Length: 544
Image (tube, rainbow, N blue to C red; front, side, top):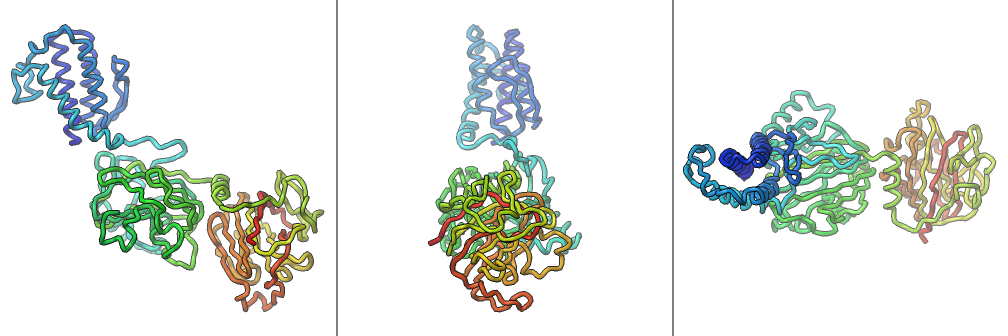
């Protein structure tokens, strides 16, 4: 079908040329040159611009599979009707033009013209009505194309593999996987086509916080997905396959299928798949492990945490490759565009999608509502900053029992501070309060050999937080803390780095007890340690 359309256009252009030569119509001849050149370019797959003397046709780019044929020839036919009313087309024959239709020598031009237009309409109209142009689309503003529409540049072959093992894979094995990729993955008419077999198509580049746009089309019984950060997966199902209804196929594609049973995002909120033969479009936004998925413009996963399939005890990796899975049925992909979210955009996204009625603790101007070491802190550009060389605890006038607090933190090189949780108003917040949640530049050389329970996000001296989730020094980090009973949860830049029950802690750093860890109520504050760490956007909501 894809060769029939441009072939018909080519013949129609030749018909146009015959009419021009036999009628000696100068205006028609000019139109013929432009349309024939366009048709020839179409048949040869050349993507150039050809000026046309007819304004309504204009200059437009075409390639060998662009479904421009129907509107093009509709315009062409309308111009023929416009400029040829006085010509006797039935008298113009193809005696000297057997290249048009070899079996039609002597047939009138009008008859062949009508036949060609009819064929073109029958072939192209259903396609035009059901799918957009196959010609590679330009990336939206701010996005880049992961697939160039021509070849597999920027991709390599990789199977279902824990990304932590990739650096140790021998080069010979990597090349074997690439050969497998080239066998089962092809570029056909500007579309990535997999035959249902072989390794997964994998980006050479790794990504962190992203917005991803991607279109796919598959067949019955196929099963596929999109790995994010080298981890499965945004699921693609045959939603009609009854044999997989027990796995959730009947709920549709787009869920984070490898999340734990019952976890948010595992199943899509709605069935949004299009019928087989039509293109589906994903939009995926991921900030930290927080993942949102739209399928065909319907929100089906709403800000859910994507779990680490490879190790459930660890958060999703901070960066990783994108993989297109193959799983037993042909699948096609196109228009794969991506943009990376910078720190400010990711922080805004996370805050806007945090649910709950938060109230500001800081007005951005002065220390109203705060007490303690107000002389050791200052207001800088709407943020609270500990003065260099000063310390002391700055804490709220109000007390809280169970609460959530969200804020942004900016660390200078080697910066050290802490969040005082249920602070009594006197003493060391790490020991006399429920805990101090460490605020620290983990990358500073002077902190290279600390106890794991001293790094950023840790319940100081009691429970260690996961590392590698801080943004580079100088960038703002978005952090959310939930305190419920004896449990403390810390989410940093969209990734949960601490989730622990302090009542269960029996081993302490340096064997030093924490007498305040079982406190049920207290102030929230900052435990200054002489470094100019900044805090802004400080908001809280009680949980009782």
